[in-house]
Amino acid sequence: MVGPRVAFLGPEHSFTHLAALALFGGDAEYLAEASIAGVFAAVEGGRADYGVAPVENSIEGPVGETLDCLASSMLHVYAAAEARIILVLAGSGPRRVYGHPHALGEARGVLARLLPGAELAPAMSTGEAARLAAEQGGYCVCSRRAAEAHGLPVVAEGVERGENYTRFIAVSWRDQAEKGERTSILAAIPDRPGALYEWLGPFAERGVDLAMIYSRPIPSRPWHYVFYVDLAGGRLEEKVAGAIEEARARSLFLRVLGSYPVLRGLVF
Amino acid sequence: MVGPRVAFLGPEHSFTHLAALALFGGDAEYLAEASIAGVFAAVEGGRADYGVAPVENSIEGPVGETLDCLASSMLHVYAAAEARIILVLAGSGPRRVYGHPHALGEARGVLARLLPGAELAPAMSTGEAARLAAEQGGYCVCSRRAAEAHGLPVVAEGVERGENYTRFIAVSWRDQAEKGERTSILAAIPDRPGALYEWLGPFAERGVDLAMIYSRPIPSRPWHYVFYVDLAGGRLEEKVAGAIEEARARSLFLRVLGSYPVLRGLVF
Image 1: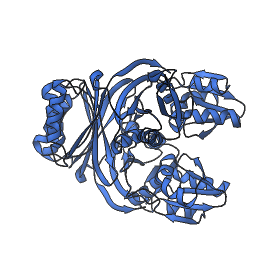
Image 2: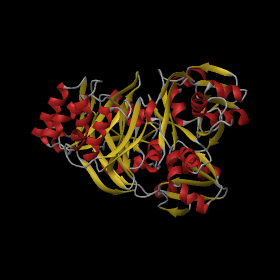
Image 3: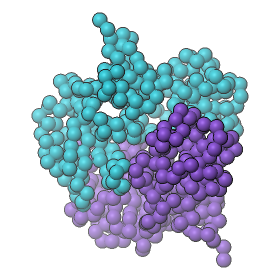
Image 4: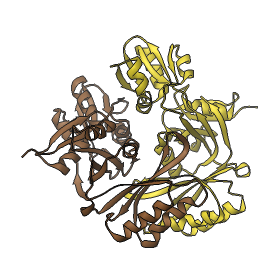
């Protein structure tokens, strides 16, 4: 028996890699992709059965590229995983710190204490930052796992500001509506006063809880928006299904991105 | 007569610098700050009278750091400026392209045609990218103005995907409510089904148009949100004032960030 093929936002030892391992286990075959668009393309093109990408961070907010890929792809959300993210400062040698700009921002306080005046060297991801620190010398802000994989000594652990959680999603050609505890929808709402209010009515009247609502600009129509909404409950539940159908009638378009189970309690 | 002191998100020749010049003219004294938090701190600390930062892009969405600074500061939104952003590819020599990760993403299509296989070198801003290309050799994705300031030859103009607009805001200790054509508010809404729906009611009933609504995570409370809402109209208008007061009664808290004029039609 061969395990599933799982594409993830790389490089190896990225936080998304850890999320993919938590969702699909040790028997799967893992493919590191260089971009979120690449993860979606791998599944659409049949090179992978599932694709894993970050979708929301409790400090930074939504991951725009993932939301945009969901909008322009036909894939569904198959599963989600929520993890607490622990960042470490690792490395030695020159006073240079590699990191994704977000991670460097998170670690600002610790860096000012431990490596005052160090040069900040932006990298495309936390995994890439660890690779650069190992190759070029210096420090990086990354996961403990990435530091260990590259043989970098950990100088400080938990360098992020406050508790930092990220939700990852797995996308696939199908969802798991029968196990759905959360439902993601994408909708465009008419551009007139009161339209969003009227659109939310069907959910409010039935007591369907909105776990998340984000607006994203429509690139081809400046200052117009689509809404990404996560609902508590699965799309096979009567009150969820009824609210979605009524909201659909008030939308320019509405697409159910998927109903799926959520893996909780992870720490990376 | 001495002009106002205006802090902006630098470096010099950044798009934000151009927005600051459009809003405050040639007589002002300009201070480049290294971060959006630095722009706010300059005004709060009295080193500048106004601070200018990007707040929303029509492709990338909201600028999270600006929204977070608005939430944690006592400053008001004093004015806004909307500009179409034109990115150029400029430089010569080694096949290496400096750029802010967003700008490199925008230019992906053009880079694949003109500089296939070029090394992508992330920089903290478009202005910084131009400086690096001038110093280290190679190419960058930046504004025409930044390319010219650093003596870099422009290889291609308009390398962005589609029309790309950015809205910038100026912050200050006071707003311009008497000239207010747009009003920004920040609110936390109770976390229960229907709460957002009920909160929007006062605006829908009075026909107050929502120009923008973004949710941002509350860093100290994972998976809880505050809402940033821009309304058409000034806070001294009766229907806007009435809707805000009614919404305030349905909020955990609500703050008017400011009512202000909007400068439109700029091209950078």
